[in-house]
Length: 233
Picture: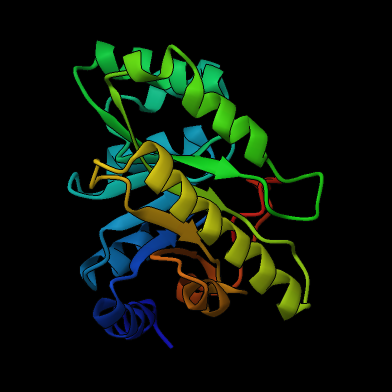
């Protein structure tokens, strides 16, 4: 099926259940992204800063770009002027750097805190204790130019669906607990980003309201030019 057909089918499925679709466009040519855009898609995810910058300069300006891969602090400044959301905040140091550059650009940048849920050492993310420590940091409340929208997690790359469902379930329970404990009065804490092409249906079943799909939309990747270990589709 075509990219447009894939987008339209997914949007038809997701709209009634209030699940947002992030089209993972890493390694994809601008022509493919334009096709998805023309079909009505506006949220796109990239995991390499340089690739994101190049595409942002070329493609329509109303695209909401999400940085979904591991982000080094020294590269925040390059995407701070335009990025819509940074999904993979895995340290307080990184969050402070995002806040600094958001302030310089007179912006508030939406962020998700990435939680390590996979049984794999190659995945990034905070463990439960590190998450609570971050939220209790004295400096945390002083960060006025970042907005924590929720949590993100990447499940283990396995065919064991029971294991994947358990990881997603635990992240949903953590999300609910954090919302009650730290963001009770903030309606903006509303995003749980779980699920990629191989497991998004399981993720939605466990409470995800944002999925990151690449091959489901664009087909299998044919290049390893931007290979990353973050596991995002």
